Length: 425
Ligand SMILES: Cc1ncc(COP(=O)(O)O)c(C=O)c1O
Image (cartoon, rainbow, N blue to C red; front, top):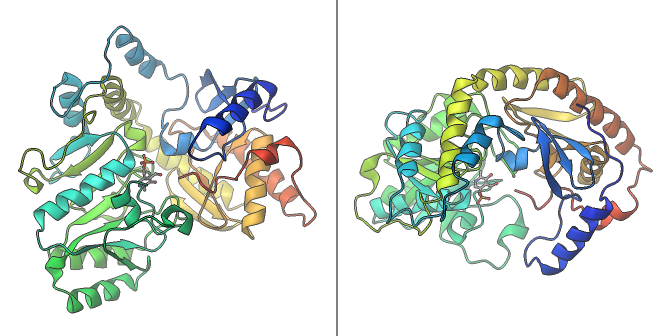
């Protein structure tokens, strides 16, 4: 297959997008097409018959691409069931137990239980809640510059990537460390000044996502783990974007040979999960939610996703194609190529060129996302092939050349829709 875009937005998409813009209370800057139900592997069609190559994977939440036959079998299996959503923390469905069992085969041994929930933000929210409950002297939490942990108020309090996310929103008490090797000293200073027991938790993305695909330094993570262990401060690894195999290991933090106390997962897992040692929480009712652990189809799809990644040995494909993608990225006229596995990014000269590039790629059939100030992230499905990577690199290369021309400017309808990935997380 080859990407093929005639016009975006096409007339059918435009109608829906314009209506949605009027009705949607939330974000109105969207990619200028509407998905159809047709797609194959790493490609999808919009409803105007444009064919795109997807290097965004629904913001890392569609790891197996489009029209996956095994996942379709699962959807078919449940097509006659009503309701499909149960109040899963109180009324049990078997799929809840099945997914937990499978999920816990891929987590570090000490993380032997999980709380299932709806979204990534809730996975983070419950991670910090279980720390606060376990540590009654908690006065504040610790996160990092450039972090993105979600948009519920607790998770948002710890999010520092862009001011627009936090403006006017009240935040829970927190302190912020630099995402570099100075973090250890900063943490020790805080511990010296405050009682270490007043620190509820430290939360980190081993590879920052929305904030710029910044890969943590090995030394920094090792130091942080050492200090948090010494002072008994729970270390939360936010793997909502980087986990579930995206880096070629099940969890991004495993690339650093570190065991966290808690993992927050979601996106590729289809449901949110707070994963921790069973001893973390004992009181019934301390954490719960109506639908957590009760969406049968999502639970079954999450379970099958893990099984497919195992069965098709996709971690190996991620590792190999990740190396190839990076090699090809190094040939481009871009800066700061970085990432692990199929979680890669690069920077452009400035934000304007980056924003233009995202649109130009789209016009040529390649979907990519922005990150940080002037970064572009590349997160294709785990089934990507080298041929498909070559297609993407060709589009990136020619688009970069066009956008780097100082006189380059997009015109026309597309400019009414795109905010260039800026507000996508
Ligand atoms: C690292 C990280 N944590 C948390 C979240 C929030 O997840 P959700 O949007 O599912 O609430 C995201 C979303 O992009 C993320 O990348």
